[in-house]
Image (tube, rainbow, N blue to C red; front, side, top):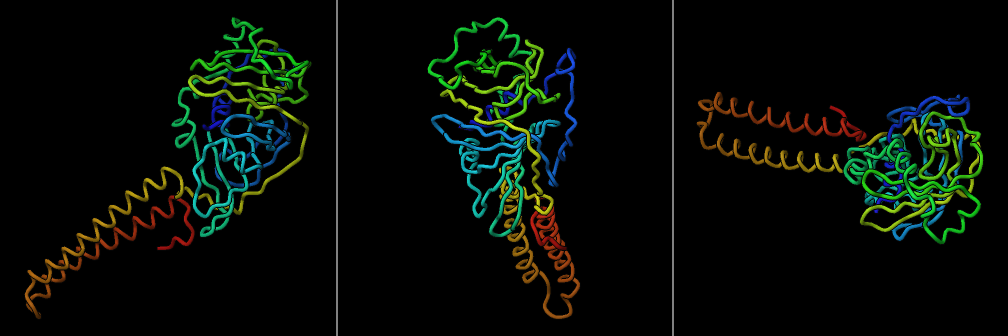
Length: 324
């Protein structure tokens, strides 16, 4: 089960908030990260989180940018388990970078070196959890206003002394947040900072709050929870500018590679057929020169198209050493 994908989808949809109060209106002054591609990424919050589910359990660290909500998850083992990502042969993943609607795994590949693999919404978020992608804050908080707030999941010792808010998503999932008392000192206009715990803009209380614990009960699958063990300011950076963005190993890239391979094989058979036909049709010696020249033009055109399509695929998917 893609645990983090579920939570990120729930919390990362763009939410529109009414302006009310200086704290609620305040924008982060921190530098936003690149919206696409690679580069140097900076983060001003550090979160240490514990994930518990039947699929994946363990601690991981999240660095968060309070201006744009981007995150980097620095425990690749728990991250990969939670995301349910398939193994990429030869790739040792060091970081998983999240930007709203987009995931990118970065590490060292045995053949291509330092690479980042885009796992964007088209491959993961939209296809794995389409129902959760429709959730938004307005629906959650409207549900929370009407829900029985005493019906919290039992047996959560980490939640003692915290304030509870329970609501339902559009797909029927029940989401329970436990907040620290008081107001978060983190200014932001991002609806949620963190992978499920962190800082949320509470529409009911009209203030930014620290989510210390989350419990999610999806429809038809087992529940899972996260606990925020530590939250602090940070001044951290991650330089991915030397990394090459390679999409050849993604679902889309592999599908295109299979299609290209099938086309190349068919074109190769066509070249062989033209060669046989040339030998059978064209007269021997000088009398067949013009005939053979026509066939060779057709064969050369096919060979050129094979080369250009292969180069185009390599360039489009970031493969190194692509030269015409």
